[in-house]
Image (cartoon, rainbow, N blue to C red; front, top):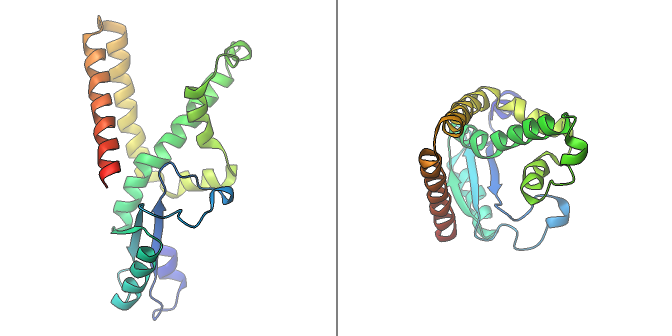
Length: 187
């Protein structure tokens, strides 16, 4: 939105957007006619965007089968940092930590779906991934600080707990995931 404001003529109505294609793939090989059906499509109109332009883009999104979801640019970036960029940086840290250990030569033989799920977040163009992480640096740092505190709490539970606190944490996380899945399915 800042680039649009700086680079586009004043009479141009900019409406940014990004689809939320959970579990549907994001590469050219995943293209198909119903790709956007039943997904949310974030729309981020510039403050000076004409209502007709906003309506036109919203109608286009609806024609694609998606649900328009309006957000402020900063709100959008904060939410994306938490659920997209934070997992990417965690994947980077995990892959780097394990692959640089002397035991990686043997450990990699045991790496299965759990490791692959994380490592797959790093597929793609390294420059594009790096730019995505840097483009949202301040918000990502805040989410990373929150995550570090949670990791420290989990470390405390693992080191000093007989299992009750860790079990509660696992149950709460499972409940949160289950609720998220239900909410996602019911839209």
